Amino acid sequence: MAKSKNHATHNQLRKRHRNGTKKPQSQKYESLRGRELKFLKNMRFAEKTHIHTKTCSRMFTEACA
Image (tube, rainbow, N blue to C red):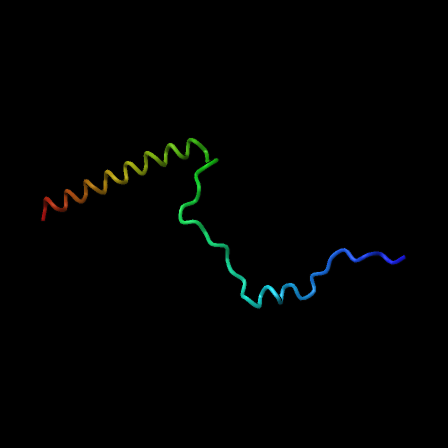
């Protein structure tokens, strides 16, 4: 008795490319779930400082102008 056929990929690639291969849509903000806690804590402080320096520099430029 002949062995049965397991798998065939003939014509599959052509069928996929007929509509064009597309990249999966990426999220705007990647999830922070499962990240290292030390990294997340540092990120929080960095964001807070970044916002603070932005407002201070804006106030300084308005005062000088």
